[in-house]
Image 1 (cartoon, helix red, strand yellow):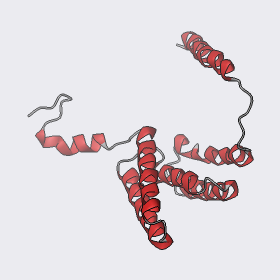
Image 2: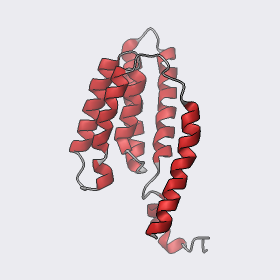
Image 3: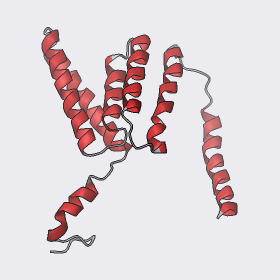
Length: 165
């Protein structure tokens, strides 16, 4: 049988390979959200048994990292680890910063492709500075600035593209 995109039964492997070639960041975010949901259930279920709770959380984390790696999500296992770090260390900015630095360092050290987008992961380490300095209070109310800025910058980029193309 012929599929809508031109694949037939003989190259089903090619179809599967194409489907798992690269997934966008929403897959990483979904897996991370589902993982912290499951971790919260485990923590409630094993509230009095810290060892069992931590072991199950670790097994879940390794499993979800494997899934992210296998289906080739954006940020791969590093994205899952960062989501877990934000969840587990949400009450300690110092610990969160240290763990995020370690995760980003590990991900950066394992980059072999030299791809610019992979190297941009290095910039994620700078996000720890405003996270560590955040005092937990709402800042100035500048939402109307962004109501204007966002469409204005898109319009500006469109105008620039007209001159470039």
